[in-house]
Structures are given as structure tokens and as C-alpha cells.
Image (tube, rainbow, N blue to C red; front, side, top):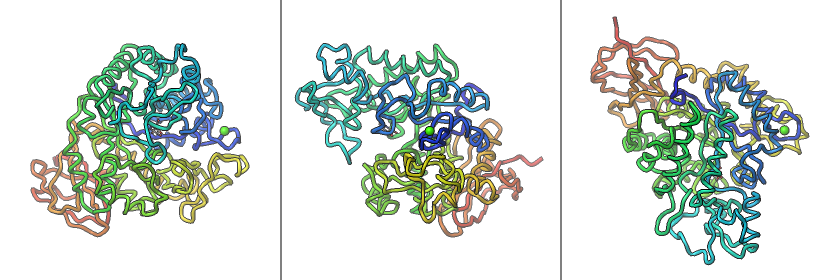
Length: 540
Ligand code: NOJ
Ligand code: CA
């Protein structure tokens, strides 16, 4: 893989706690993940993203860090971490971690010291206020739980600033010591061999009066320093921004800062397009997406470990998506929907395939969320976002083959849902059946890898005379791929305006079937939710 390896890579998000339990204590761990690396290699994954594995009281599932340079004892040891990296690299897999820059746990020794002693060297590691009146224009993100970004601390008699849960005090990036401290954390993990980081909550590092306290110039300046430092000391490592912002607001983050950023606004629009059976939402957001620099790449995803966030849509669109995808209030959380992919799509295999067809072919690198390759379900009766973090379903054995612990000891119940239960939906069963979703996803990943146009190509929309049919050409060097997708549940005609491509011969990428040579107006009919990937060849 080249320096820009991430452009061709398939990413896979691993929730270590829910992946595989090696020692029978009911919780997934690093040795368990090592034992399952071959599964990921076989799936065709190139890079795994580990959700936080730091010591933590786990009130936000590890995003409340109490030691930035350690491993949670439930997960194993630093030696296990080193072994994971070695074993992954040995298989050609890269590993990125989660760098939680913005905040730490209120149980972190820095905060314990800061709150209890005004003279503490850590006092200025946090953002304090006597009257909690500052930064009123900053929105509250965890709006279902928190009323304010300030919380009164009885120990210090002052209020401290937090963009997330009250138990996650923000670090004060105005303090150069904090900046150095966090650069040191990055160094620590990169020296152990991590291939980069997904950087958590990037926009919120600094706060300034009279602003939204998001994506401030000071935040950009810090990230530039971090990137320059990493580039100077390591090779081939990447930084990925978790910045839930409009595409145009992400452009500065690509300027000497991150190699990648998640495309948050595209994600809900894929769900909208599918429901409204029109390509419009997808086309509009991609037209609004600026060109990004060479060496930069979008991260595409359908679902992740959080709620499906609806922050990057209008109020009317949010109402629509809630109504269509989360009728039951139990399914809603903050400004989002806490469900997994397959249940969101009513268990429809065709819809799941169509969205994967887009995920794997639109401009960017795809991120798969563990278990979605099986069509795992969720449990909306668990608290917070736990319902999309249930144990990985490996087999029909007790505890879904995830753990040998007594079932009552598991960190979370396994799915016993009538449709998504582990006896029917699991790796072992799907490995056996040629028609399974798992084997389909594996084939599509292989198919994607036959051309670099998907990861690197330019995008040009193709007019289809049918708003239900999305078509585009991806071009990279000599390679051209035509993608056609029917967003409707009914059969659809499409008349593709092939322009300069007329005269080329489409070869369907998965089955290799050769189609009639393209004409200026090329007619295709598409079955319900069908999508095709064609390689365009020049007839000899
Ligand atoms: C974003 C993470 O994805 C989420 O899980 C977490 O709760 C917040 N950042 C706070 O760290
Ligand atoms: Ca364990």
C-alpha cells in the first residue's frame, strides 16, 4: 500500500468490549480481538479502528478517560495492546486508536487534583468559572442528559466547563501544558505502532466568548501543530476528524491537519433518499461538498457506535427521519436515532445491500460498524447507546459464542429478538450459507478492490431522466466505473446520458457480464433497489 493507503482502505470499527471475550469474564478484550483478526482479514478489512481502550470509569463507555497512557484492565494490558498491533501488522492489517483530546474523566488524577487544591499544577488544565455565564452561544450536545455546559463543583466551589457529560470536564487547550500533554499521548501510542487516530470531538477544543465554540482558529492551529509533529516523527500515520459539521466547514480541517474527516451530512441523506425514493438528497449534498486536497479523503459510514445523528439536517428533515425511522420514542436519543442498520431498514436485505452498494462506491473510504456485516439487530430498551453495542454474534452457542461466562455475567444481554436473535444471525451460520449477507459483503469488498477508482476517482453524475435512479461515473487514471442505483422499491427505467462515454463497453464488476456498448442515451431497467457497478472498457 502506498503512502495514501487510507484512500484504498476498508475500515472496520471494533467495539473491543463487545467483540470477543477470551477469559470468560463476560467482557470482550484485546486477546479476544487478536483471536478474531483472521475473521476481519477474510472479510477484506484493511484497517481496524478501536473504540477507546483506556482505563476509565466507563460512564461514557471509555470516552471518559482516567489514564491516557494505559489499557483498561478489563481489556488486558499494554503488552496485549502491543501484541494486538504486532499480530494485526503481521496480517497486513492497520490499527488506529481513538484519541480523546477534548476532555477526560472527572476521575482522572488531573481533575481530582485540580478540584481539590487551588495551587494544584493541574488547576489550569481545566476551564473554570465563578458564575457559569460564559460561552452562552455554545450548544449542549448531550441534550437529553445535560442542561448546561457548566457544572458546579462543590469541592472547588467553582463551575467547570464540559461539552459532553458533566463527568467529562473539558481540558483547557489554552494552557500550553495541556497541548504538550496531549501531543505526548499521541506520541506514546504512535511509538507503540498505532497507524493513526480517529480524533474524538475535534471542533470543541477551544472556547471563545461570542462564538459557538466550535472549529475556532485556535483549534485549527493546535491540530496543525499536532499533524506537523506526527509527520516529522512518524511515517504513514493518519489523523481522522470526528467533526460533525457541514462539508464546507470541514475544508479547513484538511489543510495541513487531518488526512480524513467523516462525511456526517451525507449519512442521514442516504437514509432520506432511500425512504423518499429519490436521489435528490444525495446529489445535493455531494454537489455542496467541496473538492478536498490531494492526499485527503472522506470517511463514509452508515452507522457507528453512537446514535444516528440528525444534527446536519433541517428541522423538517429531522422530523421526517424521526417519523420514518424512529416512531417509537424509545428509539430516539439526543438529536438522533439509536438503532442499527438492519432494523432501521426494516430488515430488508435489498435495502441493506443498496446502502452498502453506495457506501462502497461513493467518494471516500468506507467504515463498517461491527456486526452490520451480519445484519445484527439492536436493543432499544438498553440505556444510552448501549443498544447498538451488544455482543458480536459469532455462533448459535451460548452467549452467541462471544463468551464462556454465565449469561447473567455478560456486560450486555445478547440479542434475543424474534428476528435478530443470535441463533439465526451469526458468523458461523452465515459462513455456511452462500446467500448470507456476510458472504455478500465479503464479495462486494473484493469487488471494490478490483479498481482504485472507488477510493480515488473523481465523481461525475450521470443524468437518468428518472429521479429515482442515481447514476455516476468514478474516474481514476485509466479506470472508469459506472454506478447505477435504483432507490425505489419498484422496478425502474433509466435513460443514461452517457456523453463522452458512448462507445465504451460496460462490464459488470461482480459477475463480469458484458453489456451492450454504451450509446449516447443508454437504456437500462433496474429491479427494486437494484444497483450495478460497471467497469467501462474500450472495445478493441
Ligand atoms: C463522540 C463519541 O463518538 C461518543 O461516543 C462520545 O460520547 C463523545 N464523542 C464524547 O467523547
Ligand atoms: Ca474478558
